[in-house]
Image (cartoon, rainbow, N blue to C red):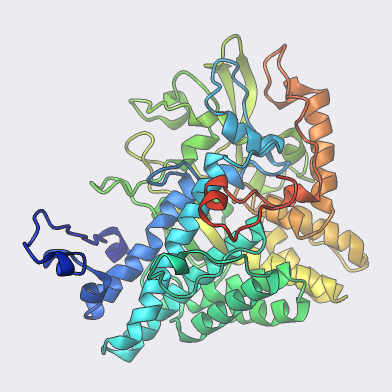
Length: 516
């Protein structure tokens, strides 16, 4: 992804005006302004434009747009029974992020709006490439590669939107005028049909991982996305077919679970697609999300070993819950436990709190030079998830024997024994779901896995909410503090986020999701 790091797309605006007649003035494009029609002229232009499609993935994950805050790491990371936040009575500016975890979202939540903005930014840039690429003549193999990347990223982004917001406006061409900016919400069928179409074409024209530049979408990434979509739609045989293809594409489990995530091991054979970061550059391409999992301490140096500390308070979010810690069946032998969770004893920066064996997520925290700037990549799809999705698709078709074959590969790598034949379909369904929870811990998978199991998300999160309300001190509330009475009144309406109120106000055709 070296070229992506060098991405720099210039838009130069004129600093003076050419004197023209009043009739022609508004129709004259300043000669110093770079427009789309002038930009897309050769292969290099399209390479830069594709780099630009990837760029918002950083903000999509960690948060931040030109106007709003938004980040997958908080929005989806806080939306399950795996994590909760540390409540600080003196720090109330983070309440919009706490609302995510407590299911008290309002329609003006900045994190939700940030997700919407970042997703449509990616889609807009992909549309620009796809709309213009056939009008310029250059090497067909290069063109297919660039087209495939744009299709994959558009499909990936629409999948993210439809899972989180339901039917959404479906833009497939550049927005060229005011009227075309506004569309009604497409149906779920329409959106999913487009996602499948884009991902299928991408899987056919993208190169394999061996023939693709590090960090870019590959045919394997497109197939992993397709498998995820088919599982979500309960198209089990379609999922089985495409996921089986991936098992023959050269991917593999690494012997050591922790090696999958090390920045010194980027591009390893387990990673199918991830968001790339790089520390030590002048372009602010580093990741800081590993610090969001750390406890709220006055000095993080004793945890990270980095001086100066880089304290920014972000560690008050995304703390592992008792439910997650109890999900391990065999902590002594499961290597994922010690490579995912660490414990801290010492003084908290929250007044009056002393930590004693306080759990935090350490799987993403590796050596780096300056706080909080790391080169830690964020995994989107990896081979272990493919194996578990394949096991799920087979089990749902009643083929428990083959499902166990793929499930046990993941368990064995973790140091666990096989689940043997004789387990029934329902029990195996629950076993697979728990393996997905542990194997993919804090990779923002748990919430969507619960949601696609229908009412399970509602029942699990209501039970979790009852536990938080009944025992707030077990969920990181200082004595005398507890969630508000409106927290955790969860229904099926809460399985989707609200359409941002700013979008409702701008677009007269948009109707808000039920419950908001």
